[in-house]
Structure formats: structure tokens, C-alpha cells
Length: 85
Image (cartoon, rainbow, N blue to C red; front, side, top):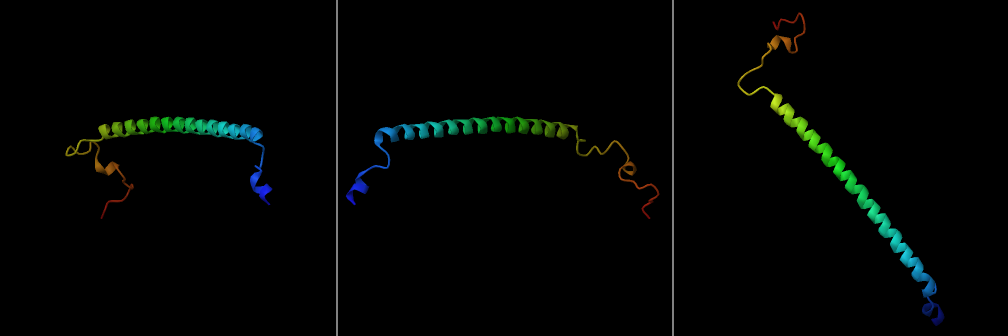
């Protein structure tokens, strides 16, 4: 019974190579994951800047408050023969 607890699962000279290989694979996968996430973050930031620029342009293009619309209200949403009576 003492022999089972005293003997390692693999001899240490062989296990060391496998453990080192597992750590190398883990670190490589971790670096690849971080690189993918960094690229994704850069793309999202670029898209967000584009959306913010479009929002600023639309804000600048809106009519200033108090000036009113340049076109008559009848042309917006009029239903032909509806007189509003």
C-alpha cells in the first residue's frame, strides 16, 4: 500500500517535458486570445468613432431651435384629401 503513494504517476524525467509543453501551449493560446481581443477592440473603437462623427454631423445639420422649419407643415405627413375637419 505504501508503494502506491510513494510512486509518482509518471517518472519525473518524462513528466517534466509534458508539463513544460502544456505550459507553452497554454501561454501561446493565451497570447493568441489577447491578440484577437485587442484587434476586436480596435475595430469596435474605430466603428464607435465613425458613429460619433455621424451623430455630430446630424446634430450640426438640424435646424437651430426657434427658427422653425423651412418647409410648410402640410408637406410633412399630409394624406391627400384629409382637411383635418
